Amino acid sequence: MGLLIVGSVALDTIETPYDKIDNALGGSTTYISVASSYFTDPVDIIGVVGDDFDEAHIKMLKRHNIGMDGLQIIKGGKTFRWGGRYHENFNVRDTLFTDLNVFETFDPKIPENLRNAEYVVLGNIHPALQMNVLDQMNDPEFIVCDTMNLWIDISKNELLEVIKRVDILIINDSEAQMLSGEPNIIKAAKMIQDMGPEYLIIKKGEHGALLFGDDNIFSAPAFPMFNVFDPTGAGDTFAGGFAGYLHKKKDLSFESMKQAVIYGSTLASFCVEKFSTKGIEDLPKEKIYERFTAFRDLSRFEDGQL
Image 1 (tube, rainbow, N blue to C red):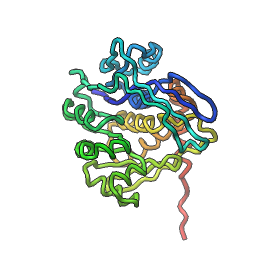
Image 2 (cartoon, rainbow, N blue to C red; image 1 turned 180 degrees about the horizontal axis):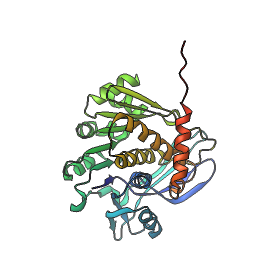
Image 3 (tube, one colour; image 1 turned 120 degrees about the horizontal axis):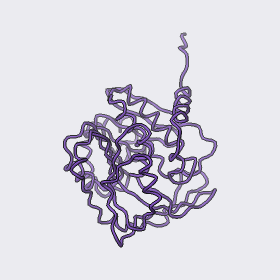
């Protein structure tokens, strides 16, 4: 069986110093599934939208061979909508509005034919929903989980129960400090791994990411970008590239995970170059590999013996 992705599907209004776009395709499920589709097949999604969801978006997802059996379309309902405005340095973002709409009562139902998925990616949704998904699955081989500061703040106990059941947790540096209560990232990582996940990725935005596991640490750089157009979805795109590559390789060694981190970062670098999913919709695989090798060369050097 394939890769199952559960999370949000949204329509975004985004303002950046460069431009503004309304009703842009967004949501964690969307970015994760499109990114992962470059590496593996089948990819299936679980989500909910209203009947205001444009058919063009569904066609784009199907073009990426993303299975839609788990996408609920609520007649008369409105799709989850989010609006945000980025500041000049893109590290500061104001939320303009959040309209949950049909997502407010989202109850993920896993079709029987998808319950044997080998890999599961839990997008950034309430921990109770993540647990609901895991309870419906038939012992997946590898579970990737994303979360955010909101759930750490208001649903920490539920989140801790989810974390016990996942293989890898993906969070950013401030979330790692918040979850562990430890300002030192290395110590925080050890504390979080003790909570359950065998592996941990701590994202550091423009400074790359750290992978922890097997008593090892891998530090991945961020790709140097001359222009960041829209960082929305970059983290979810990273998770999709990471999980998709691992599912393709069928290899969960630390070395394979290092490669997956770089592929995740590669897809994320394409994502930020355009609004919404446009930067990752029609990428030639040769272009992905070309940037992957450029990533690799960023930190490659010859031995320097004293």
